[in-house]
Structures are given as C-alpha cells and as structure tokens.
Length: 108
Length: 111
Image 1 (spheres, rainbow over the protein chains, first blue to last red):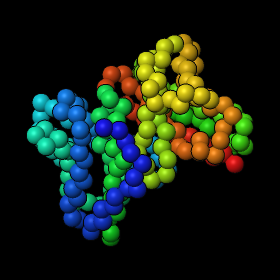
Image 2 (cartoon, rainbow over the protein chains, first blue to last red):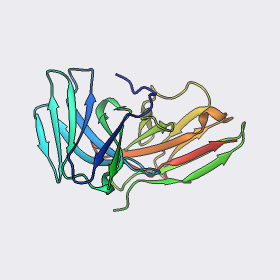
Image 3 (tube, rainbow over the protein chains, first blue to last red):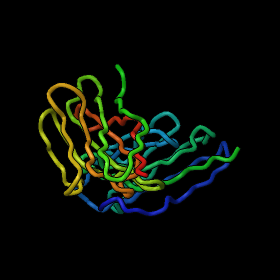
C-alpha cells in the first residue's frame, strides 16, 4: 500500500500509562518493518525493527508485535513519559513505504 | 560518526526559482533516499540513489525534479521553477543496508 494523505490520528495517554500504537500493512510478502518516532521539526528517529520470522521484539520500554495473519503491527510503549510525545509511524523500508503515523500526546 | 546532514535547514524561494537541497550521508553509507513530507502527513518516497546511479525514481515527479549522488560530494535534490505546491519538508536518509538513518530535513517554503 502507499502512504496516503490523511490527517494524523491522535492518541492521548496519561503519563505513566502504557501506549499502544497500531499499523496495518497490505503486502503479505513484507518481511522487514521499522517503527520511527518523529518529533516536531525533526527527522524520523529509529526506535525498533522486526523481521517477519519473529512475532515479538523488545527494546527499552518498547515492544513491537507482528501479526502476520492479519498483517498488523503494534508498538507498545511502557510507562509513557512526556518526552515520548511525537508522531510514530511504521515503515517497510525495503519498499520505501511509510505509514502516515499516529500522534501521541502524553498528558502530565 | 556524524549523522546524516542536510542543508540548508530552511529554504525560501519565490515561484519560478530553483531550489537545491543537499544531503551528506553518514560515513560509509553508499545508499541515499529522498522523501517529501507535507504537514500532518507521512513520508512520501521520491528517489533512491547509490553513488553515481539512480536506482529507483518511481516517486519523483516527471518534471522539474531531479536528483544526483556524485562520486564526490553530497547528494543533491534539485527542483526547478518551484511552485507553491512544492512547499514541504524534504528528508534525506542514508543506509549501509536496510535500516535508514534520517537527516533533520530541509523545509522549503515557496512564496
């Protein structure tokens, strides 16, 4: 699928809560995904990646889940902090596809 | 190891002028990618280059836009005869293989 020009969905969470951000993809042959974080006025920053031979990968406070059956990715952020406020998007870098993103607002 | 560098960070042009955006990849990276981002939207792929070669330009508009990555020096994205619709943030990324590292972007404003 291609990135489409939609207004970003927004997720508001309370500081300290867990956040879950979702992403769907269309190509069942997709085999490598990255989650990026983009703060206002800055370039995208790598958070975590996952290959299709895995269904879960954990980093520091972040977990990515991959469900190949329904072609769905999620990014879980534990104990969300104000510094986590940003736009998050999934990407299939090998196909140059970047999702339109979700804006995460963390309320103190 | 410095990250991906882009300049200028902000560029203002009048309609009809030319815009030149530069990208210096990370040291050792031979792959460069250009993306365009409109406000509140995701990244749209434009072009993928290796040194002296355009590998994939399927996202480049057919007219007025060109890109190069010479043997020496930065990659250049050139937009001729800019129009207001070209106003956007243009991001460059570089990679050694799969993972792309992004620069801070150039914000182009066309008056």
